[in-house]
Amino acid sequence: MSQNRKLTRRRFLQSSAVAGAAAGISFPTIIPSNVLAQQGRPGANDRIVVGMIGVGGRGGGHVQDIHARGLPIAAICDVDSNHALNAARHVGRNPFLTKDYRQLLERRDIDAVVISTPDHWHAIMMIDACQAGKDVYTEKPTCRTLQECQGMINAAEYYKRVVQVGSQGRSEGAARQCAEYVRNGQVGKVNYVDVWHPVNFNIVNQNMQQDSPPPASLDWEQWLGPARWRPYNKGIHPFNFRWLMDIGGGFIRDRGNHVLSCVFWAMDADKTGPVSVEATGRRAERGIWDTPVTMEVKWEFKNPDWTVTWQQPGRTRPLPGVFEGPGPKICDWGAEFQGDRGSVILWHGDSADVELKAKQYTPPANGVHLFRSPGHMQNWLDCIKTREEPIMPIRSGAAVIVLPIIANISFLLGRKLQFDPTTRTFVGDEEANRMLADPYRYPWHV
Image (cartoon, rainbow, N blue to C red; front, side):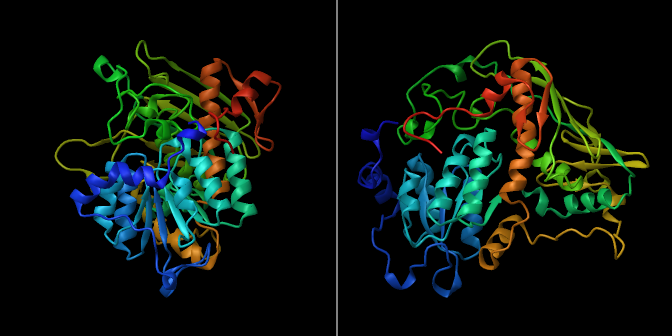
């Protein structure tokens, strides 16, 4: 987006005035000084004042969640004015509306922001929010590149911000039970974790892949932001950006971020990383999507030695008994931990479940007892007040996303790659290392 096309608040209000009037929504410009918060601190009555960035889909759910907790939502940002108006209608209280997240970050009444945009915006928005003195809840996947990972870590630590990555599986009781079961040696030494998942979407409806003008409510230039320019296409927006390598990266970076987060938690691997990766798969035969339809990946770890595989599609496992009704029920994604004394299955990764033996297990007094999260959003809000580290901090989010990122690079290059988990670079492969960063479209940068 060129500087002369920078969205101004006045332009947003002009484009939204009619729709806002019809919805009974006004757009305030002045907030009483007695409710203003100190930057980065809770406001009046010790309530955290929140700004929402991206309020369609998952972001809309976060709006409802924050509002239900009685927390004031002072500002809403979305590049689709319909999404912003719908969220404002739900919230009431006449929040400030904008299509440019930077205008939201400029507001001193906001203590914290929730980022629920497509993947290519996560890093730059999180970094800018930290710089603006806001605490951040940012949706998964953490980011697109390892360069972005390091920038996000640096920003959170330098500006001392509380950052929670939205891999909410770590706040699920079943994921904690699985992790405690594994960490306390109930399956012995784990040497292999198998993750299975359905294939990536392979579009056959060519009508969805025809370029067309964007909807009138959508600022397509602002949606693209730092991503390379491409014409609007229903095969990209609103959901299908997931099947483009440079924006979404496929299920391995989407749902894979969830389940691999639980795997890392169970294996106590947040401070480690793989030493090699090898990925193969079948490419789509036509259309604009370039993520592989099928994908098989193997990551190897050292000290201790263990392996993770991603099978897409993989061998499905039956759901636990609590979900069984007439006929067999099969779970289409999850992870199985295989040790030298047994195994345990974790189903899904966000709304997780685990085998009954793990649910019934109680760690000994001197065993590993993991933090019992009150809920992923609540944990983040609690930590904003205590300044403690949340259950899925940015360093952990960065550690997990390494796996999908380097797997996609291995697939694109068509070869096995050696990886240094300390420097987070490939060993002896400059071509692969050049893919660890991705240039932003002018004028965006981190």
